Image (tube, rainbow, N blue to C red; front, side, top):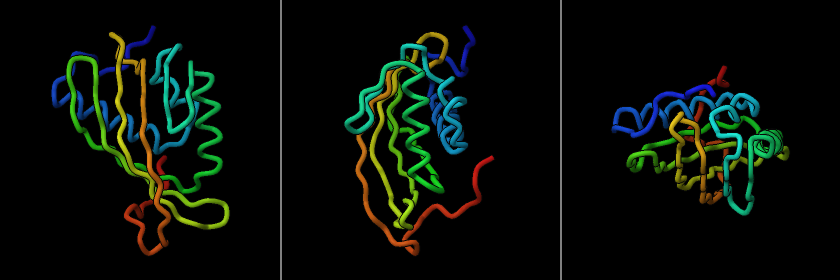
Length: 142
């Protein structure tokens, strides 16, 4: 099994590094690559979706990023302790009809000893915005 540093128990510095790594990974929008940050048997709650395992994560993210166009995400460390991290996040995207959206909420993460995320529970709200209301105006992540 490959370790995914930083490893728990987290300090403030390593928790911030883990949050930044997650933000960077999701902004690349590569479901296969993103899934490698999670355990093989990872458990997720994302809105009303309940996922189990990397294969379901890949399927979910593939669907998500095919609908959420020009997706850009920001994550912020909220709290941490031992092998757990809580984050606040917001992201923006537009749908196929051109409507822009801002989604925001909180995630609770739990990691195994190898630094892989074992559990991810996300509560998310959506807000329709105009293009002029966008906060995140940068080039596509590489």
